[in-house]
Structure formats: structure tokens, C-alpha cells
Length: 212
Image (cartoon, rainbow, N blue to C red; front, side, top):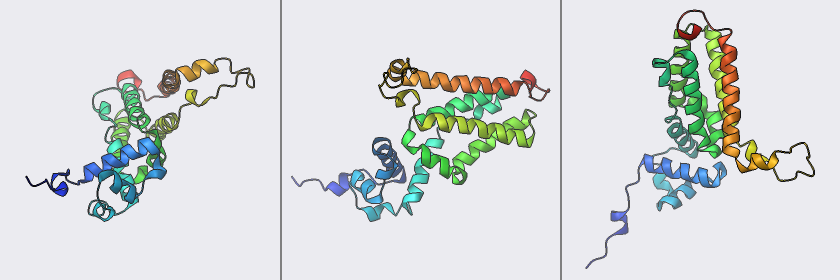
């Protein structure tokens, strides 16, 4: 029996496979690990074959960022009041980013050239404008939420403490922080988002549900 040709049985190289492989590599080894040769090795192909799908490493990183931004849902602005919609969007954004913290630095700098990111921003801005917020405040509100989410997703506050209670005696809950970093981090972000929304309530336009 003639052995099967490995090239004939290998999965077809596609843009989607390249992006998924790059994201898995970033999650595992960080942004610095990404090279076209490394991605090709992971896929079992030659590096030049990647250029049939991606023109450069920068284009690949942007495609990976787009794939993560696809997970951000801003549709709540089509069915909920502005406060509930902002809350839903913020948490959807956070969940997408915190799943891939190593990619967050690239997401932050590539935001303005990603079609999906701009489409989500457009949804949010339109929703706030429909709720009666002025253009300047709608812009600042969406930017403030984005800053909070990126900061929270970039790294764990609670998980970043070392165990040295003797040297830092006032950090008496340090062990508790390190034991439950995800719960502490999420509670901290919730506090920030909730208080921010409370503050917006005091200056919200009068018309519409919840004083929009």
C-alpha cells in the first residue's frame, strides 16, 4: 500500500488557521514570540507560504486583534437604556481582552486601524447620542470605559503581589489577594464601572429611560 502524501493529508492553510495559531502562540509565549517563521513552524509549512494570506507580521497581528475584537458585543445599545448598555459593553469588552492579556498592548495601539474596533466604537457612540448625550460627552464616556477596561485587562492587580508581609506590613491582606486574584480584580473593576455610571447618572440628559 502506498503511504499517503503528508502534503495531501495536511489541513489546508487558511487565513483563519494562521490567525488562530498566532493567537495561541501569543497567549502562550507573548507578543515577542511572534515571527512569520515561528508561525510557519507551528503550522508545519514554509514561511513564504504565509505571505499568500498575510502581507507582513504587522498585518498578521492586526488580523489577530480583529479576531479578538469580534468577540466584543455592543448590541446592547440597540435594546437597553444607556446605563445598562454601557455596563454590558464594558464587561463584554473586558471578557474579550482578559482572555488574551498578552495581546492587549497591541490592541491598544492598533485600535484606530481595526475595522471591527471602529465599528464597535461607532455603535457605542451612536447609542449614546440617541440617548441624548452631546458629541463631546459621548466621546469622553466611551473613551473612559475603554481606558478602564484596557487597564484592568492588561494585568492582574491582585495577582501581582509578592509574598513579603514582613517588608510591607500594611498589606495585611496580601495573601488573600494572591489566592483569589480573578475575584478581586473583577470586584475592583465592577466598583469602578458602577461608580462611574452613578456619576454619569447625575449629569445625564433628562429625556428618555433612566434619565437619558
